[in-house]
Image 1 (cartoon, rainbow, N blue to C red):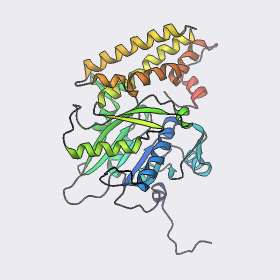
Image 2: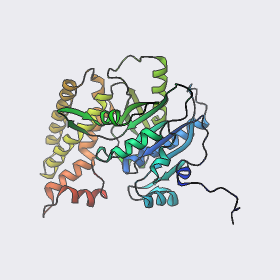
Image 3: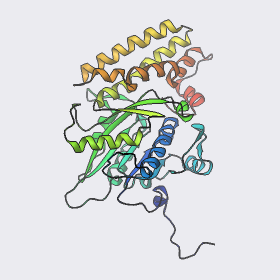
Image 4: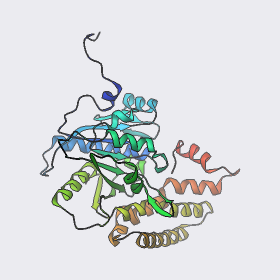
Length: 351
């Protein structure tokens, strides 16, 4: 029996991994779907490596090796803790031992310096953004502002008051605090989750945010912060990440490639072959480029040749979930609505 005088941890302490070294940068990932879990595996391994290995990089401060991982359902968090895998969304992929799953969002976010958002854009609620704004970021002295990095994996674009709004725009508007600076970045790429779960090689593009224009770096400190954030995700042998300041270009590619993939899926459902699908991909890429350049300043041509551009478009049109759903939508008899197909084919996840 435990000593009765031993203090028990609160749920928030359990979510944050207990007492943490305040000098270490803390990282969390919100969203335990298939892609969120795939990225969490990479980040957790990187945190362990960066914390324990002198690799020649000069980082401003090192990282807490624990990755806090938020799942919406307590039962899923408990299952991941018990079995060491996300059997529902990424079965067979072992979770690193330094990953701590919890359904306590406040406890997961508390004091974190880097927050990775792996939830769909439709689930990015005002409540989630408020919790991030209030509880993220470490202690500061005097007039110093805490710097918190938010990296969005979510893909989406919508209109608000007649203007385009990306997920990063929603975060910049919705996550604010008078004593904190939130730097919004995006991570996109040709990343099919189950292949990442098998540790097959993949690439991604990190669009570093904060300023509308893309280059050069404003200060050496800003460049160092970007390189530090890059180190959280980059694994050259497994998940090679390219860093760019073209956040808008990266994010537009990530949002619009899903539309093109639906067209590819509809063609597949009609039993049309690779010639037709290749034409859809080529024309779709052209439309993405024109859309990005006509709506956002300083979008770089190189972005469309990165993993977030043509590579993500190709893998989504040939192996993505949206393509599979669109093909089945055409083929199924009797007809089924989209929500039913998502429930049957994706365990209820939304594309």
